[in-house]
Image 1 (spheres, helix red, strand yellow):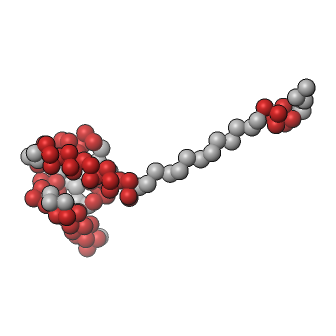
Image 2 (cartoon, rainbow, N blue to C red):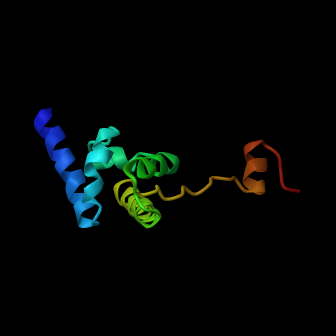
Image 3 (cartoon, rainbow, N blue to C red):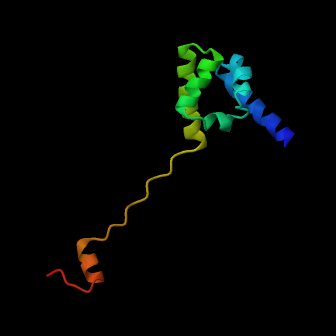
Length: 101
């Protein structure tokens, strides 16, 4: 489990570093975000509080929010809408044993 936790933390660090936000890794980890999915699951209000805790300038905080939105779409894409199954009026009448006339 420790090795997996370590690799998850490294993935988080690499992700932040690739976005020039690695200076915040210590403060982010201190708040309990030890992996990229855990950070991705945080809501907007949580991310804003985290950014404030880390002392991020507004631009960095907004950039982090946009990057996390992109990450969420990649990790957890929305499911395609399912077509509604509404019976037509004539088929519902036929199912009830009635007629359309």
